[in-house]
Image 1 (spheres, rainbow, N blue to C red):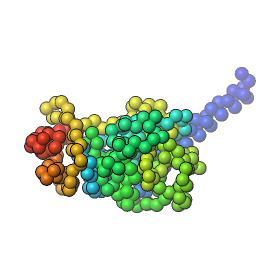
Image 2 (image 1 turned 30 degrees about the vertical axis):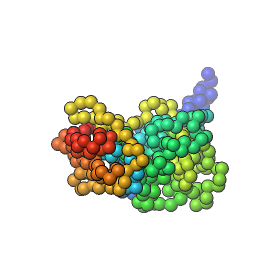
Image 3 (image 1 turned 180 degrees about the vertical axis):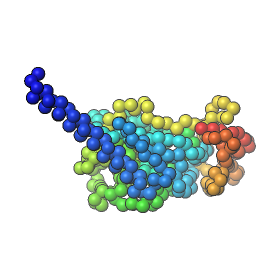
Length: 320
């Protein structure tokens, strides 16, 4: 190989590597800025490696939760350490990706799911609204667009309205979250303030973007938020999941079962010391799920009276 050609090739390789590194650093800085500018830097951390920006939080937002739920699954939100990996060099894929868990994360660190409750969404379902599994239409969501799932972790299935109200940079140009494929999520309008025209959003609730190549949106109509991922996610099976609580003595906990017809007067309260209570009625009977931090790190003392357990009062220590 001639010396001049070899030198030129080495220089080109170095420039490409430098360009890729710069792009990753820029995307890392953009993810970090989206959290900081929204005002969530005190409760959410952003760190980056060569491939991902990690948005880390306890998934427990600083806004009202659970208010307005009728279709309760008798699960409550419990803090859960969660590191959401955002790809730093996003690439569009050829096939939409679905998943029975989170598809992204809001800038306050709360995971974002599709609109269905239990991972019912398959690729074949994307083109058809799954009304029977729609968490909003079945009144499973609170007034903020979220609820607690099987992992007793709080997450959003629709536009995170309460979080957006808290954002210091709230506006059409503010990024409200990130999908795991590395593309940003915006609100109902385009970043320039114009309305998203009917038909502009694709099957995943996204469209092309001049800055990032692609972006997702929330919407007033289903699917409300990210329905699937349009970008490539090489390690899809390694994306994080929040495990259900376990008994301190060992063994899992039975999942709550939605009381038929829904519950009434659900109220969720919380104290500064970490004690929380979800109280509600079902067919005129009072039920509750209450917990407070125990002496063990990551564990909580629960006292419950649920429809799932036929109204039997139970006490247990549950741990992350």
